[in-house]
Image (cartoon, rainbow, N blue to C red; front, side, top):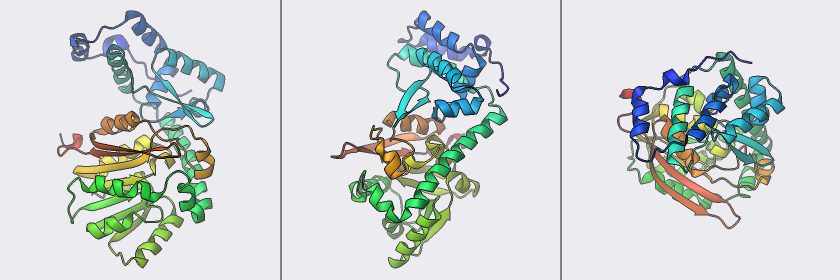
Length: 351
C-alpha cells in the first residue's frame, strides 16, 4: 500500500471555515450523521480513496489495482464510504464506478462534506499513487485508441447509431459563435475526427487547430479539408496533455461527442483551462448519462454519458464559470447536452 500522510481533522480546519459553517442559516448539522462521516475517515486507506476520487471516477477493480489490495477489501471500504455519504456509485454498463457525490439534497450534508474534502485534498498524494493513476488512464486510452484504429473505416456509421452529426452540429456551432468570437480568434477543436466541423470553423476564423489522438482520422480530416480548399488548419496528433505542453494559447475550445471516449474526462477541463486565453470559451457537446450499455461495444464508448452536474462540478473546480446550456432529446432515448463554460477575464492563475 502507498505511504500515507496523517491528516489531523480536529486541528486542520481553518477557524474561518468553521465560522462559515456555523453562520450558515441552513447548517443544522446532524451529529449522528457527522459522526458517521468522521468514523468513515478513520482509516488512512479510505482517506486516500477520497483523494484519488477528487477528479476522476474509478471502478472497484481499478481502485484495487491502485492500492494493491484485494477486491473484497476494497468493496468493504467503498461500502463504508458510501454509507457515510462520501462516495456514490455510478453504473457504466456492467461495471460500477465510484465518484465523490455532487448532488446532495441536505445543505448541512453538503457543507460538512465539502469541509472534509477540503481537508483531505490538503494532503499530498504519494508519487507512486500518482504513477498508478496515470497507468490506469493509459490502459483506458489504449482501449479507446484500439477501437478507433480498428473502426476508422466505419467511424461515421458507428457514431450515427447514437446520433447523426446533423442533430447537434448546428446547435453546437451556434453556441460557440454566440460568445462574440471574432475573425482573428484561434479555435481548437478537440477530437476533430473526420473533419466535418472544421469547415465552418475555418471559414469564420483566422486559425483552427485540429487535435485528435487518432492519426488515421486526422489523415481523413486533412483529405476532407484539402478537398474543400481550407488552408488555415493545423493538425496535431495527441491529447490535451501533449497540447498543453506546447504552451499554445487559444481563444476557444470545442469538442463534439468526444468526452465519453476519453480516459479521464475531468482532466480535459483542467487542461483546456490552462491553454485558454482569459475570457476564452469552452463548448462541450456530449451525451447525458444513459443506460444503453451496447454503446460501449458498438461505438467504443468508455463512459455512458455524464450527469449535467458532473460537468458543472469539473468545470467550476478548475475555475470556469458556467454560461449557457442546451439539451436535445433524441427519439432513440439518448439526450445531448450542449454546455458552454467561460474562463474569467481575470483567471485564478493571474489573481
